[in-house]
Length: 325
Ligand SMILES: [Fe+2]
Image (cartoon, rainbow, N blue to C red; front, top):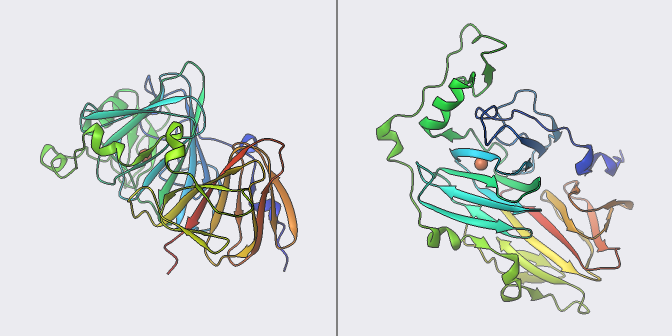
């Protein structure tokens, strides 16, 4: 059966976001934020979160847009969390009190945060801004909030239950058989890791430093490759990763005026995510086009190719599954 590849095309402007995706979602600094689930549900606590592509990819892709000075409260993950900045300036801060360190990132920057550490982020530009987030594994598990986030959320009427679902106590009560999740205890806080700003900087690649990382794939001078995570193979050439994190997925940027990849077959899941330009994707002889903020997931085992069809330099992220069993 031929499947219509347009079912795997994700036009960002057609996505339906969650307005209260997490427990702190009614608090100042978090209430003007939207959460998008593009591949998999991610770690959304909103049971009504719309998920665009539910098929397991070995990773999850989501996005967050936020008004100035809005973003996510301090939380920890059990799998990889990699941020791709698409617009604006974003401040990432971390530690149990959020004061152990910070980095401010801008368009085209990438940061891979370690597991088991509390991190939060906010849009520090003066306009709405957008980031994409790639999480590791089919099931990225649940996030752990700092006790302070859960306490403040409760004051706003929002309670996270022991099955990781949210209740707004202004509208509903806690269902029978369920209980509110207890904030983690002081002694359990000690099991989370601490990092200085210099240590986290090793997991950050800033776009302004791209010349340090970009490699030519020696394919008619058309392609520049910035490889972030895991090995990347294109036109029979291998590219080493620049971030030393084993996330279970590869992340690469392909860039150039005439950037393109000739047809290839991959048995793993793979997603193209457009930062700039207009890209034609051909997949099993069907064609589709993705522009900025749009993405496309090639079916496993399909024959696909990619080319920038805009008359300017284009940049596209390629996310490849690396944990296929
Ligand atoms: Fe997160």
